[in-house]
Image (cartoon, rainbow, N blue to C red; front, side):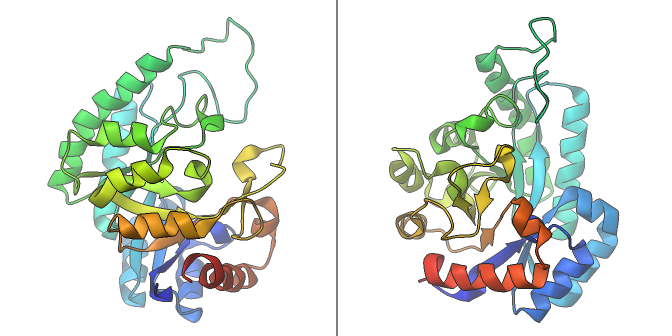
Length: 283
């Protein structure tokens, strides 16, 4: 596997702005980058698109759309904006993190039975399907591929009511593969006993392959439990082989949320993750 498929997800080097991350990619010989909407907005959408084009980079993904479980018009409007941004950036896909139970706020404790949490998990998943029926045609008209990302079950309450690749594929199946695909993220799927069968089932629906390690023990903030490949418990070779056998030939993003990684010098981080990628993912 070629190192040319290595993509830097911008939040692996979170201290870098869009401009700084693009410059870092150029200096380190990286040909693709995954961008985040809030950072693109800070840089400016038009300027971000120009910086990417001028540097000759590919945008492997834009993160993120989603948070669809409220069923609100505001959520749909925000996702339409995300689709428009992905189109302007010519991103390979718009990553969709579908959202948790309405009323559950990420990283905030529950206040008791009167807090207003909607505990209807099946209903939340149904609203995701309903929103997708609205957004998928809008995205198709703009040449944007939606990529449903299942998250590890520990995030089901607050970030994603899709917990397995199989669930994501069930939602994607009514649509053409080029219109709605899925994300295979090693952190989120490595534990699933059905993962290899579901990767094979996914086939050309794989819109993004993201890699990082699953640390043990996890930190108190489990969102930051993503480690540099080799620092955790994931065996990358079988997952990469399965994704390759399924026909995926796109960029492979290294996406790491980790306080120590974020505090380190971004140039050193990029050099380290490239080396580990070559040793453990692209071997």
